[in-house]
Length: 302
Image (tube, rainbow, N blue to C red; front, side):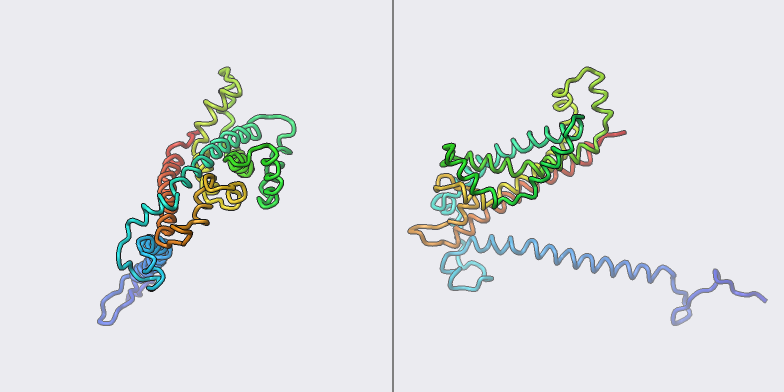
């Protein structure tokens, strides 16, 4: 007489047919994928729908915006709102001022922050730990506390009425975080690279420009992306140091956006917001791909 072992035992369905042991696992896997897809779909709606609504609102007339539902489609597609935002709303001037303030500030932040991170982490000298702590203390200083003293200094130095207060303030407020991030990244760089460069006769400047920068270019690009959005989206500093319309940045311009005769034209206003949002979104998507490609392709092989 034979005895069924656990390996031979089968679970029968109704009708006597054996049930596969992996069926419940596959069913749970399908349910998990379904919930994951639903969550991703919900996130896409939450992220994309406001952009679609903002774009549709930018094509409405003032009558559509004031007398119809907020969620209704435009009765007439007012593409001229973008032209009015660029000319009457002076968005072109505000974008130019933002670029004139952001580009020099970003260049100084990346150059000085990368050099400081190299000096604090790679070079050996007394007091570097204390210096790094001083830089870190700068992160904890609120921007609101330094605006009034800086305004007084810029006024006495004759810099008021220019974009230099914005450039200097953006550089000073962006350096602490940049130095900390670059010093942290330099900590993971193999010291053998700089030792080999020193043996080959490279000076400190040559080691910084020719050895360290190619290695940390991914970190520089990442920090530059973060700082770009911090500076571009700033309102408080730009509102404090810009005292006339010719110096307004894009955020201050949107805050004081008016149409003809000082009336708020909501269609051109939302068109100006779309120009700002979709422009920075395109920059983010482009640079984000560059960062990801650099992180995967620029690794140092040990």
